[in-house]
Image (cartoon, rainbow, N blue to C red; front, side, top):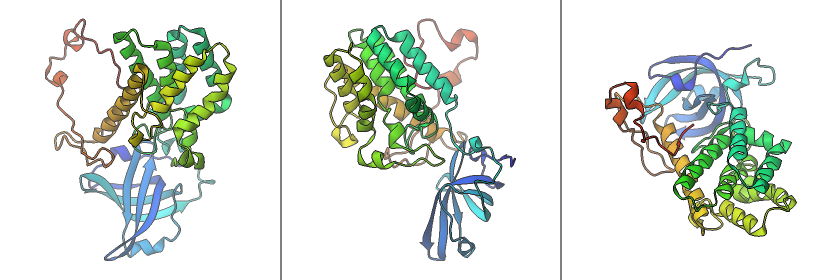
Length: 345
């Protein structure tokens, strides 16, 4: 078994690295000095850009995504982000290489099996209306749905883009919605919880779950919102105890959770529950995007992330009030001041 000892999240400028990685991306480009390879290396802790400059680049003609490679390189900073200059590279036979593949596939910090069990427990403990509870149980008993749900990321790159990411995101959105229901008790708590748990289920069919997940043909042609409704429709039809009006409202929540047509939403929210789901979904995605953007910052040097094209801005890591408080048990959680909306698992 070939052991991996150097992980991307631990790289520092000036470090020389020799280890095994997966190629998440591999493409050739042209500079004034000649052709070069633009790579993205991946392990379970993240990705890093890497370059093979001319003339060394001419030694490699068949580099491709999902190849397993052993390489040596130097870590440098480019526009505030770490980047590797590759000095030596060898493509390994993925079928013959004795490696622990869990070292190369990013996954949620909690095992996906625990996250799925937590979502099932939430449905079991919080749903009062038996037909909704039965519906959720039947959906999650399906072997194909369970397998895909466990493996699926919540996005390709922007947030929760790792194995178990879809479950992590779904669980957080469900908890956020329950917190809002505590403030607005007239909301349909049961329906909102079920919609929150399954709002992105179609992503398990929209995105593959391989080493470097990409969009499937159904994902490109239909998108996760329609795919999710297709998956859930047979279970809704079998549930004769669910009133047609409840089913219609449930479908509306799934169809409108992106909020606006410009963001790929087939419909815009038209009920309080639909507004809550849309904003809870958006909140968790944005909080996670911030967390991922600032997680590698050296705060002694800068509190700013790199520019994020999808948000059209860099993000800031602010000082926290707790950093200036005495570290005593009396000041950690003053009575009556606990946060009702858990934002991160």
